[in-house]
Image (cartoon, rainbow over the protein chains, first blue to last red):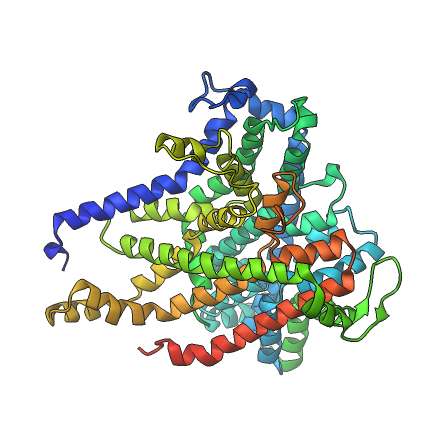
Length: 287
Length: 297
């Protein structure tokens, strides 16, 4: 079929894809370019397209001068704790639903899956009330604890689907060898399912790293801010922080912060593109 | 393993997740239904007032209807545009192009970036003085407006920012396209069907379940928009939802009622109206999906 395709059509496909890709990448390029300019360059109207000399020290300025490393480490800490909790509780749950015959198992699993439909807006007010009573507001516990109790239902679903493709005879053989259920799970099933586990880890990271809603509700002390809240806080207070005049937002530093925030996501994407794409594709497949 | 052992292990391994289900989903869900029937401001105990929160929202709360309107306009404009762009690029990438993985990566990447950062970048690009967009427009001799601070242009800009993330449905659609059996196209080609006829009668019916899935998820996602809308106001030092309620999305309005004004009962009622609409859409999805969508093999 392909050999009948006219050359002009092929050229058109590449031109369209190229133009589209340019539009997709332009905002990111502008972000990085702006992050390398000086404040006077930003204030000049129009600002130069390119910085006269790339200001790499902008990164040091935001990192140390505005304690952005604090926000970065807070975000990283929350993400690591959330990922650890998700893996440690979703894998066992997925194993239980994949391999055991228990009455009403499908009903329970169905109820669990239904919570994917439950918007966070419905649960947030009672949860806020409870966390306030426990004095958990202004700590990371409201962000982390749900993950340690199997909070990622989509992850349980994905892992269970993957676990079920492992032949039952493998499990039976390990049981006959006297392996405990716990070690079958962690030494046999999980190592055989690493792609699925990695997909869950990546999506959990993204969800935690990008989240603005929950940190905004539970973190009110700037020491505890994660990156998304920290970035908005910086923009709101930027004039004071940088000693600029009213209405003069130091966009070069804002873009530096945005770059710092986006960089780990891009790096992760570069290394694990297939897991991302498979994770997205599997969310689109019925059942 | 005997039956009792299996029972024991099941509850041991699934226990934490099931406890989480009760503590973080089931209980707060029911409690928020109760709170939606109460007047509650956090400081004093909830007081039962029947359906008055719902009546107030539906009959006399101007912010409620403003936020419904913003959300509906967003859904009606953003969703078709995003699906059309996603389908267009997916069709291009389904052609025999070199470096497909690279193209796909470029289009997909913006959809996974933190929205607070994306919004900050776009607010800078859309600045009236010295913003990248107005400078490019000036090259073409057009004087651009004050995009982000204008009540007229703010929502279109938010729509544009969210369109940057169309790579997500694009990847799902591309997966659907690659599952369309080649033989169908080849047979139709031999029978003399043109490109449009093949698209209309083979590709479209074959991927209709994927399109329908994206449509449903898109509507539900639009109803829940929060990060994007909050960041848009905050990055300009505006009240959330500004300028002049132009970007007061439903999810943002709910957040404001609950956490800025402490109208927790009213916000719970808003949450349950949202939940009811989501359940309705999910139910319609199952009922109508079978009729409208081609699921045959």
